[in-house]
Amino acid sequence: MSYTIAAQIRTEIGKGSSRRLRHANKVPAVIYGPGKEAISIVFDHKDIINIQGNDDFYNTDLTIALDGKDVLVRVQDMQRHAYKTLVEHIDFKFA
Image (spheres, rainbow, N blue to C red):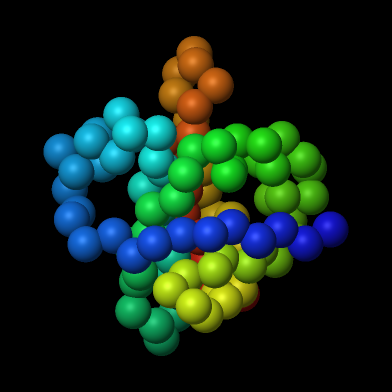
C-alpha cells in the first residue's frame, strides 16, 4: 500500500515553535539522509494519525507532497505522547 502525506516546509525551528505547532494540531517533522540537506516540515495531525496505525506504514516508502514536488521517504523514528494518542514528532529518511 502506498501513502501520500501533504506537508509544508517549516521556517521556524525550536522548542517554542514546535509546541505552538502541536497546540494547533500540527506535527513537526524532519527529512534527512546522507549527502542531502535536512528539510524541516510540518503536516496536519489528522493526516498521520489515521495511517500510522497500519503495520506497513513503518516499512514501506511514503510519498510526501512538499510544495508541488513529491519526496520519497521512510519512517526512521516517531515520538508519541506518553499517554494520549498524539504523534509529537517524526524523523524521515530519504528513500
